[in-house]
Image (tube, rainbow, N blue to C red; front, top):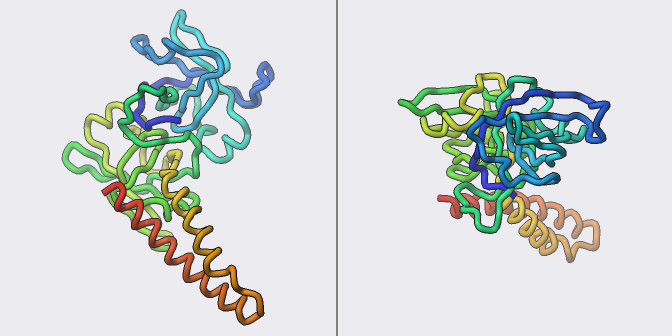
Length: 255
């Protein structure tokens, strides 16, 4: 579990696809700034979020410079943008939370839902507004105005949402203030580049709980063909109602 508050920006020093010397598939080695204390309490097997992806430390060293290596499974490469990393790439880093960690962001699992493309960047004074369009449009039902979202592992607040279908619709926006721009990799990305996306898991739990309840309520008594048809129509209505309820609950919770 993570908070979405980036602790450090590291630099990729080696990226080895199908590493023949490792049992961990593709491997990634990341070097830290000389002033970093990220590995001060590190142990083999610890979890570190790399651009929002929970990965396991397989080796690490503190000298001559602090660095660590992680393995990346094929499924992770398919679902995230880690496959686009190369030596010199900068990545957001965060250690897994401890029991005494201050929850400055929101609960982030490090399990990416999809990737999203930056389709617009708009300056607003010293701030920057980024517009993102997800590869999997279904995640939009979990994205609400003023709700949380993790982009490359950075906990951010959604400032606008567009749910319309079509090539021009289906996007959300976040704003990065000057302070944040200096501390996360998203600020250095350009239109056309991608970010890893993890939506707020609270919305998923609410949706699953309410969907099970409403589908059971609406479909439990359907036995004949006419009743089955009515039950299906009722379930469809219930689904629409459910989606509105989930959006309202999440929006109210983070207003």
